[in-house]
Amino acid sequence: MEKILILGASGFIGNALYKELCSYFDTYGTYFTNENFEVNQKFYEFDMQTENIEILLENLKPTVIVSALRGDFNVQVATHFSIINYIMRNNSKLLFLSSANVFDAFTNYPSYEYDKTLSQSIYGKFKIKIENALLRLPNHKYNILRLPMVFGANSPRTLEIKNKIEFGETLEVFPNVVVNATEISKLTQQIHFIINRKKHGVFHLGSNDLTHQHDLVTDIAKELGFKHPLLKQVYDSNFDRFLAVMPKDNPLPKNLQVSVQDVIRASVVI
Image (tube, rainbow, N blue to C red):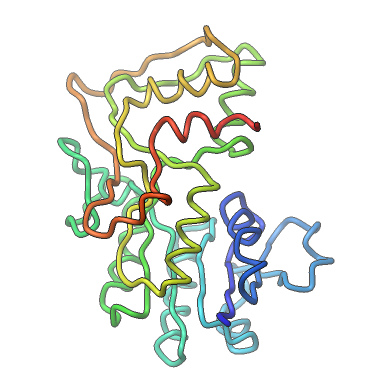
């Protein structure tokens, strides 16, 4: 049985992934600020600002490490380089949750798994730095999992839409930005499949279709029961620009694929 360590398991994605995997694998997680996890003996407190991750890795000896860390970018880079040192010495691999922002300098088309990365944002450049270090490793030592916007009934993005509407605040939307998206339950199932089938390489875990960011936000608002939200439309270009990570080279089985409509429907608890 795989021994899995989820770094950042107290966050939205990390905790959902822990719940998906813990019944099938020997699964552990780290937390930083959420003291509710102190009583869970499979959770370890970890502060990447002051602690060396290799100490925890050497003690726990995970075969699969999933990084859903958040925080200071420079500290994250140093932490991931320490993880790379560990996996090169041991029989283990790293699943790195990356972002569509590694392609945010390309605006004329969606991006696929093995397209060249190039970013204008600090966030995208930070993700690329870790990706490039992983791409120099043997293929079986890593997965790069690039994510678009992640929604779900209790996701931070959905709650932000709901809270802003309920408090009469405007929603900032981008009519000329073309995106894809995903929802948390399908995302965790996809990662479960990648771990279980020992897949290698780069995966784009977004919907197979595209929509404008404006339409996605307003459709989720309607699904939540708000037909006429206050909108602030931001036009940062005279033409459509793409920020989408589309699956092509490494497609997942049809039952694990997701559409924009699936994302919209998942914004409400049934």
